[in-house]
Image (cartoon, rainbow, N blue to C red):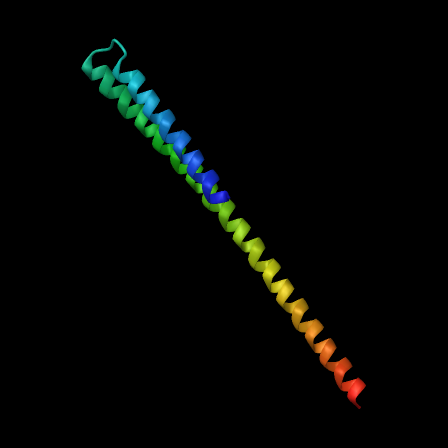
Length: 94
């Protein structure tokens, strides 16, 4: 589900950047001003996208780390239960 959310977020950002670009292209400025605005907006959009991507990577990394720790805890708990059952079985057979 998180992967789909990230695709939606990236799609929204791309759409916003495209909308800003179209708005600049149709603005009544001369070519030099339009190119300057496109460069500025492109840089702003790229920085925003980098920030969002970095946040997404951090979030996914944190979730994976949490899942790994939980899996390790469950595995340790399972080993402990298995050893406990082995002991109980040995005691009941003796």
